[in-house]
Image 1 (tube, rainbow, N blue to C red):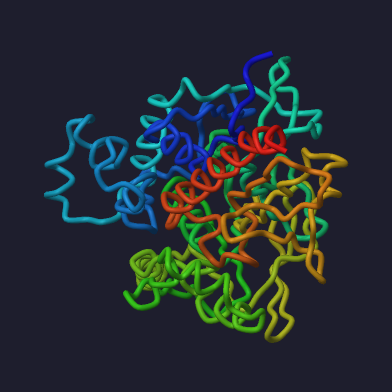
Image 2 (cartoon, helix red, strand yellow):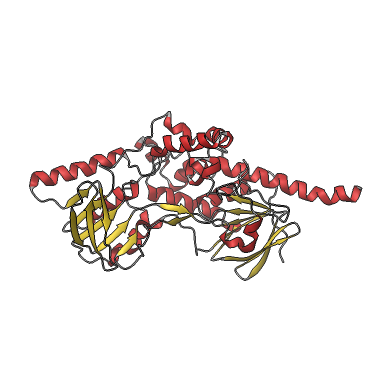
Length: 416
């Protein structure tokens, strides 16, 4: 068996990629390994639309807010790709999503020696100084786990994926299976839904594209300077220390910075298209507000039902795309029975310390850290890129403090 790791990262999306970089840059050696079940790095590949841009500044990359001098910054990536001056002249804080994914891949390749791809983690057990598990047919032992198991596609109750029913995460990976569709339905009112509507409207000029949402219209994201302070690292401290009622208020006040909202330019573009089609007399972009999709069958038949007057419009859709968001994957699922050692609050949520460590009983000596799934304790940036660079620095510092304490314990016992 290999030497005991200081930390094992489960999952290798942007969060644990940023942690791997922090390990690489640390002044002292850190024994770390990351395990990813995918065969290579990938992040929302199904929504890497050619003209889609990031909703966060490039300065909120994998490293800059933690270490502005890092060689893993987005600016260093641009220099390496020969586009630094071009990007500066572009005068834009928000890169293309495809470009940022390429940045992630560039960084992941540079820390690839820390990662095992195609490695499903199973059979996690507690041992004296931490955990032991199986990955890619080998036994791994670690003092600490950092779980970054990402998000799961959210579909409405009763809706099952099929050849004609997709979640938007599969948009680009499945769109080539469509042959001259006549009717396309997109459900949802957020950024991904609006992007999917625009994408289908461009891609299939003969198709009618139906956007279905309960709101009266797409709502713009609040990206104003003061509202954006909710994404500041200091806001995590404020949120963590706040009473539960204040936490609920903050999430409600600032939900429109991230959830179910659309970039203003895209809203205006979709409105222009609708108006233009009214003028020319051929309307194929049809936005059904204050409506819901009902009577959905696996072969694409459905009904758009008005929430206002109960009116019903049957549609025989070639594809129905649900852009209905994501929910955090259960980070403790792979722990099996060990999850019973993790403490929960009065309504069943995990108790988490300020350094993102799950509170456990005395049955576990190892630390379990979460990247994601901590909105109830740490606020809106729990699963977002905005605070990733700072968060991984805090987690690494905490892990190394715990490792130092664990290594000192036998010495203290020996003195006794």
